[in-house]
Image (spheres, rainbow, N blue to C red):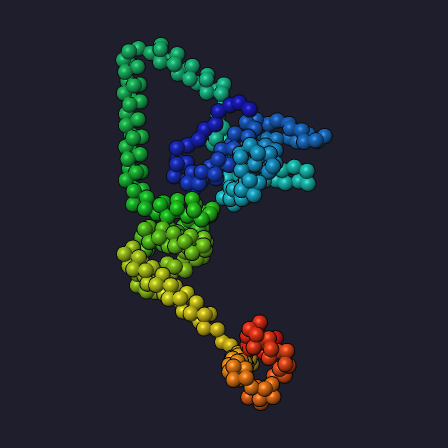
Length: 327
């Protein structure tokens, strides 16, 4: 597809220009739109297209724009909501229309003829006429430059608003016109640096949404925070509280509450262990004193049924008294 498009410089100050992906989708629509009435075939069906229209397919657009289909869908929806384009969808295809198409359209032949005519007219003019035209042209250019300077002067005070908007678009998500105005209002009230700081904190806490950013700003208002220094001090206090909270939680987890039955079981095991050790010492002492089996059993209150073979194994050192009792 060939031909020229007209694009006014004021687009530099539009919301479309502030989002590079949105700008890319917008220019894609301009360049795909037909510059005159034509017919396009979709399958076996012929579709009549008016100037500024083209057959739109999300898959094809995603491929040509090197974007995800969902991304293309979202930006097309934004352009629709802002009345930049309109989409008429049927069960087989969609026709996308660039609104106010005449603003962007330029006819190559008319442009070339106009340029040629102006050149010939200028060549046929006398030196004095050419000088007068040049003076007029220079004066007009100077006037345009003056207007640009006036525009820059009047918008310098608003430039502080763009940093927070740009940061939101680059790091959090798409900005709709209503959200853009809300961010600007907060920037005017608290300052752009504080709004950007709130956005950074929403990212640090893994809650990247305008709702969470606004809750931080509202919290600052409630606490009387109006400067970045005050916000930084409040952040240090917040992190200290989070650290103490985590530490206390860990300590509580470490202090495990044991049930009574478990405590009783442990006590019983300790008592049995102590009883076995005491019995083993009495048995070994009795064996050294060459006491009879009956005397040994009596010394341990007949708690363990030791055989003569058990006593012989202890006497001969094959097993200790404790090993025999545990067995």
